[in-house]
Length: 81
Image: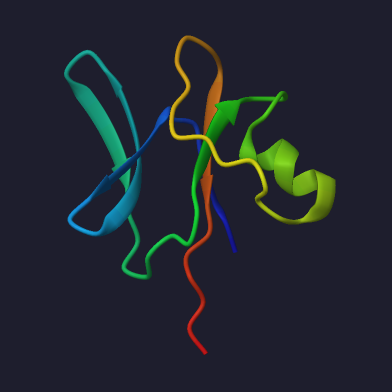
């Protein structure tokens, strides 16, 4: 399972990775109780997670930030056995 959101930053703090976006003083942050194994942000239709996953069902393109465009963030939580 993957989460797909349209913000523009991948942030790492206190040992956790979150997906985040802001405009001015307004922020949106997505975290998970089960940590993301990898995250990526990209330009929609070019190098975003949805486009990457459609290619081979794997998140291969890993970017930390993208600005000034139509952006999407993608990240799967880790899987516990």
